[in-house]
Structures are given as C-alpha cells and as structure tokens.
Image (cartoon, rainbow, N blue to C red):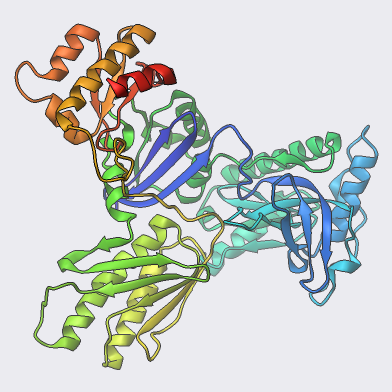
Amino acid sequence: MKSELIVDVTPQEVAIALTEDDRLMEVNREQRGKDTFAVGNIYYGRVKKVMPALNAVFVDVGHEKEAFLHYLDLGSGFLTAQKYVTKLVSDRRRIPEIHKTERQPDCTKEGQIADYLKVGDTLLVQVTKEPINSKGPRLTAEISITGRNFVLIPFIEKVMVSSKISRESERGRLKQLVQSIKPHGFGVIVRTVAEDKRVAELDNELRVLVKRWDDCVRTLQRAQPVSLISQELGRTIGIIRDIFSPDFENIHVNDETVYEEIKQYLDLIAPDASKLVKLYTGEQPIFDKFDITRQMKTGLGRTVGFKKGGYLVMDRTEALFSIDVNSGSKKLYEDQEQNAFHFNMLAADEIVHQLRLRDIGGIIVVDFIDMDDKANQQTLYEHVQQLMSRDRAKHNVLPLSKFGLMQITRQRVRPAVEMNVTEVCPTCMGKGKIQTSLFFTDEVVERIEAMVAQYGRGLRLHLHPYLFAYVSKGCFSRKWRWALRYGVRVIENQSLGMLETKFFTPNGEEKFLPKSEDKACEKQ
C-alpha cells in the first residue's frame, strides 16, 4: 500500500492530507498563530468550580470555556505530582529532583475529587480532548510526553508494553531494556513501533523525552497560573510521529519552513527517510495538483456515492451521527436478500473510510439495508470489525439489531472535519438572479487593471476551472492577452466558487483591492 502525506501551508492554517493508494483517507487542519488547545498541550491551570455531583472540577486554562477534569483523570500519582509542583513554584532558585520527591499515597478509584481539590487550587494539566461545539477542553492531571517509540509519564515507576506486541520474548526484552535505561521517578509505555528496535535508538529517544520534560519544569518554575507550559508538536509532526511507516513513499510540502521542520524530525526517527520529503514549488495549489480538493468536495457532502450505484446519506445530530445506506435504482441480483447483502458489504467499506476521513467520533448509527439471513448479518458485522481494526482511534462495534441498525462508538478527541461543498453565487448572493454573464470577463479585466495599478505586474490570477477553460480557449486566448498586456498569469484553482477571483504575488501572498475600488469595479 502506497502512503503519501500532502501538506498545504497557508498564512491562516496548515492542512494535512493522508492518502493511501491515491485515495484520500484523512484530513487534518491546524490553525496558525494562536493557541488552539490541541491534544497534548500542557497548562498550569486554576480550579474554578468543584462539582461533587459529577465528581469533577472545572479548570481555567485560558480557554473561553472552562476545561473539564474528572476524578478518574487525576492519575494514581496526583498527590506526588502536586507536592512536586508546589515545591517547584515556591522556590524559584532551584529545581527539585523528581526521584527525590517523597512518594505520596496513590489516589483510589472510589475517592471524591472534593477531598483532593478546592476552588483556587493550581495544578498541572494536559489536554486530552479539544474543545468541541459548546464544550471546553477535557483534561488529565496525569502528564505524559509522547514520542514515536515511548510515552514518558512522570511520578510513576511502571513500565508497560503495548498489547499489540504479541511475541513474549520481544515484550520481555523491551521491558527489561526500558527498566535499565529509564530514569527514576518516571514510568514508560512502550509503543508498538518500538518492536525490534535497537538499544541505541530507543535510548536516544528516551533522553529526548526526558529533556522535553525538563524544559516543561523550567517553564513551570517561572510561570504564573493559567498559562501554557508546553505546546504539543505541530499537527503535521504529530501525524508523522504516529503513522510514519516504511510504506510512506512521499511527503509533499509547499512551505520551506515546514519542509525543514519535517526533514529535521525524520532525521531523528528515521534518518534514511528524510529524502522522502519533497518541496512543492508549482503554481497550481498543492491540493489541486494531487487531487485532494476534488476528493474532499465529492467525499464530504451529505450524500456520498459508492460502487455499483449505491450511496450513503450522512447526518449529524446533537446526540449521534446517522448513516443511511441506499442501493439506488440499480439491482444487481434478482434475489432481494443477495442484493441487500452485496450493497451492504460495499457500503461498509465506504462507511469506515468516511469515519476516518471526517474523523467522526461519539455514537454512530448505521441503517443498513434489511437482511433476514442471520449468516449474512454475522458476515457483515465481522467485515466491519475487520475494516475498523485499521483505525487508530479507539472504537467499539456492535452486531446488527433486530431493526437492521449497527451501533459504533469511536473516540472523539478533536472536532470532526466538515467542509461546505455547496457554493453561494457571489453575484446574486443566493437570491437566484444575476447580471448578464457576458459582462463577467469585462469585470475581471477591470479588476486586473485596478490590481496592476495598485501592486504592479507579475500577479497570479486564480480562477474556477470552468472559467480557466473559457479564458484559455483559442490561439489568442484571453489568458494569453492578459499575460502580454498586464503581466498577469492565470492559474486554475478548484477550491474557488464559479465567479470568484483571487490575486496572489509570485511568493503566494494574497492581495486585495481597497473596498472602494472593488465596489467601483462591480458597479461598472
């Protein structure tokens, strides 16, 4: 299986697309230039409310909505961690050694959070779930530093090995190895990718993780309550850390800074793989070049088609995400049972693909086409289970109910990917009437003249593919005439609306007309 990562960097955000055999599988977006309360961020927060009925507290970490911390998320070493943090912030002259901190009693599972925290208390917390809709971030007080091979957990002494490493000899080797190289006062979770790794590589990564913790400690010592202590690696690096494998063939990036960051990270985890990173310098938008935009627009709508003419209807409600399976007008078999079974099996592939693509979490209810044969129902259930086994998110799949419904739960740690695949006409603004279309190219010319007068020659004009085809028609096309007269190059951009225009400099910076001049162009 060929895997590729396409990274689109803009001034506002970084969009990361993962493809498998040229099929879009995952899309992630990361806002730039602001604290996004991403999973893995560590904060020095303050307790705002204690809720005994929920056995939880609400913590102020700087988000507009207070973050939620349940008692079970305190971690067994919470009291030890609190003692260490209190000692650290009270004496800013020296940093106490973690292994010399007196061990406090572990938190029991039956305890009450009011016995451990009160309003005004400060504590070190980490984001486990990003803010979604009206809910603030979800937190844990059990801090962890995630690497490619290990997860480092301060204030505990356990060494745990991933259950996906099945060979007992390898599990024993890794456990013994980690016990010998880890510092006192830290626990370690050995991840699946550590299987068969050399001692030197594992030891090097463990040192890097310990250094990241030391950096957190130094920042915390100088910090005031309600502040960011450590920011998780960018979404791009995080994805590479979690999913990078020998199957990766290329990582395409359109920004030189992010390109260098990825290369440096790959040099640490897989030195031979840094050559896979390629800097994209084409004028066409990178997502258009690699067919990402088209797949997003066709795959993220309310109705999604699949093989043999079937389609899914997908709707989100407050409580759950519903998926309805339809066979369409096509009938492949005369037998209704066989026909339903065939379409359901095809639909299962697309449903699992959609869950990953949209990063849908929470409760998912799938209304499959009714089947009476119990064997077919069981086969479909096992097929969905097998497909879901490749999903990195925690999930649970239940057999079909007597109503033909399948219930799936999937871990939700960040908002689902949503994309508006409909376009509002920029001329009528949804009213249904537009001016004569013959005048549109005249407006474009007026806009070009105004932009060239404002910013000079050498601009790039981005147009919808239909308009691009129109202005490119003929030997002496409008595209050719505009380039000759105004020095403007016309670029096809699939993400634009039909009558939308955008201007960019050669280095990718978008340019705008002053509002007064823009309105004058429209009136003319």
